[in-house]
Image (cartoon, rainbow, N blue to C red):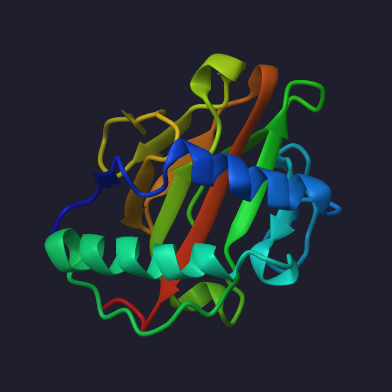
Length: 183
């Protein structure tokens, strides 16, 4: 089993811009944690759930394709559903946007079933500093490729973080594939 996988062509740069335009037109809200708990020391970002945004249905169709291929080629997890909406996060320098070390498997009924996480880079890395997606699937820190439209996939139990944004703003798209508990 692989611990990390990259899909460099998950979304085109124009599609990334389209996703950002969809959520920038919608009211973003302060990001919480599982259970709607807010802790700005751990996470400081604004989010939008795409199932609440008109005209975003095409995004889920693409997500299904990318996740299915990555799972088939590298993970082979028992993935049965997408029980949560895709989430777009905006990390800004004004808020020192970040998300400290965490895993995506949580105490919530749905979060307990997360098996595979996919994070798509929606912003051009030239437009911000910091905001690096780092993962720790082993004793080493691995840095996600930052090209616009690139998806990074990893088991939801892998520790990861987004370092503070110090200039500009970074947008990302996150989705979780769900299934029975790991054994």
